[in-house]
View (cartoon, rainbow, N blue to C red):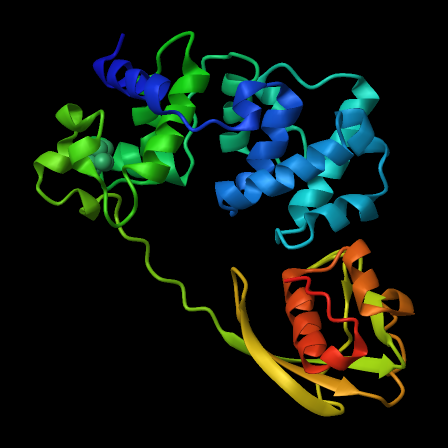
Length: 332
Ligand code: SF4
């Protein structure tokens, strides 16, 4: 066996993180975990995973569920297109009656890219496929002292691939990147592949991979108004496509309305929102024709609807400001 994968797998067998989808690596569980863990920390993903599998124990349950239920369970995880793709893909799988059994078929599912297809194929299907996510790319760049592009890291990852244990190899690299070969402070003294690491031999392993040019993200102001009537607030459903598609939200206005109760910054991948939150007891504006389902709801009821992390922050501001209403359950 390749000496890198041999040392890596010995370490993995003794130190691997115990995670439910590893104990039962069926395609459905591995797929859900991979989608959830994109842009999400493992400890957060674990909580969502448990609730998700309890509510949708099989791909058929997920396919038959209303999209609203899926979005509600996804509330707070962000990147809601992932949840919509999951739902769409589950319906495709349920129509066929089983998951695809190869890379090509997996890639045809909405939301499944090159990384995820190879991860599922190796972990759940036992196929000899290497994969590269951010963690693995960093480990490979350091191991090979390579400042080259991500594509080159796929080549490196394949050179060490142990036939018959690709799933463990990929997960070992993910664990190594997450816990030992971390971005800023790699723990090289305790690293199982240190004797093979060219980056370590340069004396400055953190120079690999090459730093990405920092993207400047614009800051955009946003005014959200919580319209109140007795114990209810006015919410509507955002359009079916675009940012926060299909989620419930407070109306946005170019000009502020009412009294400002606070503000916060909310960072998205492509912009930073400077959010100002207002409360008004006046009549809500005419419904936006692209939105739907406007309704007066008690704040606690919003918990049972899909809302974004941004809406949850607004709601918390509103509830903190009005504790006397007895409706100050936090969604944060
Ligand atoms: Fe990363 Fe250090 Fe291990 Fe090299 S020796 S792979 S830099 S942790």
